[in-house]
Each structure stands twice: as structure tokens, then as C-alpha cells.
Length: 551
Image (cartoon, rainbow, N blue to C red; front, top):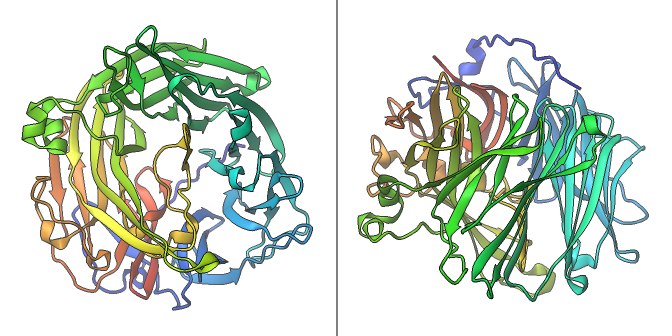
């Protein structure tokens, strides 16, 4: 299923340049022609194949459109509404759309109330938005009830030739959680599936169970990180069951378990990255534990564990406390001097493998504020505010120890009103959690949250991060002096450069041009390491573009 990567030479045509743009040194941003004012906001750039770019558009919260563009000119070719048929007179809820080895598949879910079955179906879809009459049932997950039906989580393989899907749900009466993971090829044929029900023990103090992350490597091996923790009040210690469940294709996907032995600390979260040298890198935050065994919950620092997949062993485990300069930027000098820990509001968004085999970890301050609903019954609306602020940059050496750390200063938020709440790959129910960083649901994109966040680009040993910032922050790198983004329609693209020692160089537009297109970091497609297909807007003016990091 390996996709052969063809070298692509981008020629900047005059027709792509359009009007003057906010230019930044080292960054080349070019755009296609202005898109029609059809109220179809792009919420996902699906991919690029055969000289065409595919994107998903959303109109009026529930009408999805398949949009096709020419690769070179980014000129619109077509835009057709996706009509999802019913199954047994039940409407299917649109979940997502994927491009697998050049074939487009629409994925939808439907709940069978009578049988308590949560189905997930997939169907190939044409460029005209017409779904094949032949659909494939991907999941028929039995659940406790509709309100506990859980969610489906998706992960596309690096070569875009396979799709890994997980379903997780809770069974309250059984004090159990069931997770079901399955791998599909580019014909939606099942390559692997595994299901397990984990029983809770409510008698244990401070019990928590988390499916922290799941991953697919270049060999189509599957990995799941499980973290179960509780406090043993008799022994006065924190017990951590921290495991990687390994399913190797070469071993017939037989389950293998790798234990990561943790003592005297509590694991807060975990993200996982597979590497080309047949290993797994696990990173996340940890907290300290009191003498009575109770975890403090606040962030003490970041850990790194490496799993050697040749023999399924944990080669190294390093815990790195936040250094004083980093804590000053996050907490202020007074609290840092008192030895206070960091609030648990940071989620890992990116893991980057460095040229020397070490890692760069980006952890963003993320918060969702849900207001009180207004209205009656199904007509009630809920205000939701998404907050994405500063990013902790942690550079780790190949052995997992700290190389350097710094903080990217930014302050961003976007408020919307929605009829339903969903947090994408992040959910919780009591002591059970799934996922980590906040992903904005597709139905809430196109209204502001997609302007938040940042895009990292790692090239020649240098980390580059581009994001939308307040024009008044030009030249400022001090987190105490920055101003909030405010109106994201007036934002300007800003580039922060971190060298191999962690020193910051800030690049702002040479000349701020009013009423210019604003980048949407929440909607992009990574064409290569240093080239992105982007989506930018200015009120009703939308354009696809290419962002290239120059040497």
C-alpha cells in the first residue's frame, strides 16, 4: 500500500499571485483565484491526487459538499452536495471523508436503538458527490444505550493507503469500558480487528482509566496506549498501569503487551509516534505524588519512553522537570520561585523527530468553555468558547533527556453558538477518558475556531511555527507583553523560528496590508515536510493556497 512519492516542482503562475499579500521572510504564500460566494466553508482539505485537490465544504451546519480543484492553478472544478442515503429508514450522520490511494470514501454512523448497535458504514464517492450504492459496514458495535454509544476515532496511515478506526464506549452497569479497533485497506477490507472490555473497580481510590492514543506505523502495525491508575491507601502509593498494546502484522496481529514501569509519579497524558527505525516514542506530562500516595495532578514536567519493537522492550524512560526559565514564562516569576507546578491545561499537539534522533514536542494551552444553553428543547443553543494560547516547546535528546525548552507566546480564542457539543478526539465520562488534544468538530468549523492554533514546519534542524497574531504584537516575544488575538478577521500571519539551541527569532509581515486574507491553521494539508496546501479567508473571500518554507 506504499504510495510512491513523485517529486513536485511548484511553478508560481502570475494568475496565482492575485492582490498584494502580507509577506514574511522565508515564507512563500501563493493563492488560487477567489472562490464563489456560495457559503460553503471548507472544513477539511482531504488530499491531493492526479493533479486535483479535494476538499470538504460545509453549508448551514449539515449540508456537506465535495469540492474539487486543479492542483496547479487551484481553480475550482466542481462542488457537489454529498447526499447520504438512509439505512433501514434511519438517517446516517456524516462522520468524515478520506482519500485512500486515490479513492474517495465517505464515512457515516447510524444508531440502532432497538438492538443497541452503533453502526459505522463507508462508501466510495465520486467527484460529483454521488455515493456508491454498495456500502461497507465497518463497525457494528454493541453499546449500553444511546447516551453511552461512545464515539469513533480515525487515523490515516502515513502513506494514505490504510485507515485505522477505533470505537470506545462505556457500560455503566458493568463498570466497564469497551474499545474496538480495526484497520482497513484502500478497498475498506478489514485487515485487522480487536475488541476488549476493561472492567472498572470503583472501590479503588482516585481510579482513572484512559485510552491515551492509538497509532499505525509504516508496516501497518497497530499500537494502543492504555493508562490505568489508582491510589493504594493502605500502601500509601500511586499505582500506574501504563501499557502499550502491540499488534504486529508480521505476527498475525497477535496482541503483545509492553509494560512501562512507573513509580512515584502519575501519568497525566500520552501521545505516541512511530519512527522509521522500528521504534515507538511515547511522550506526555506527569505529576508528582504526595507521601500519602495522592497525585498532585498538576504538571511537573514531560517524560519520554522509547519502545524497541524488535524485542518489545522499553529501552529508556526519562522524566524532565520544567526548568526555571520555562516556569517563569508559564506561571510568572513569583509562583515559579515558590516551586509551583503548571496547571494541567496543556495538550500535546505535535511530535517531531529531529535530525539527531531526538524529539521536539509542542504542547498547547487548550480550553473549552461551555456556557448555559438558551432556548427550549431541541431549539436550545449553547455558547462555546475555544481557547488556544501559548505553546510549550520541548526539545529532547535521543536518550529522552531535556535538550532545551522555550515558550511560544500567543493568546487566541473564538466563540461560537452550537446546538450540540462534541470535542472530536477528546472525550470523557467520569473516570474514563479517550484522547488528548482538542479537535474542533467539523460542524463547528468555518465559524472561527479554525483560525486558532499553529502550524509547525521542521527543516534543516530548525523549527518554524506559523500562526495568526494581533498586529500590535509585531516584534514581541515576551509572553507578559503580548496582546490577545481579538478579531481574527484582522489577524496577520506570524513566524517564530527556534534554532537548535531554542533561541527565538520572530518574523512579521514586512508591511501589514489591511483587508488581506487570513490563514486558517485548523484547515490545511501537509503536502511535504515544508509545503502545505492551505485555506485562507477574508470575510466572504476564500482561497486555497500553497505555503512553502524557503531555504
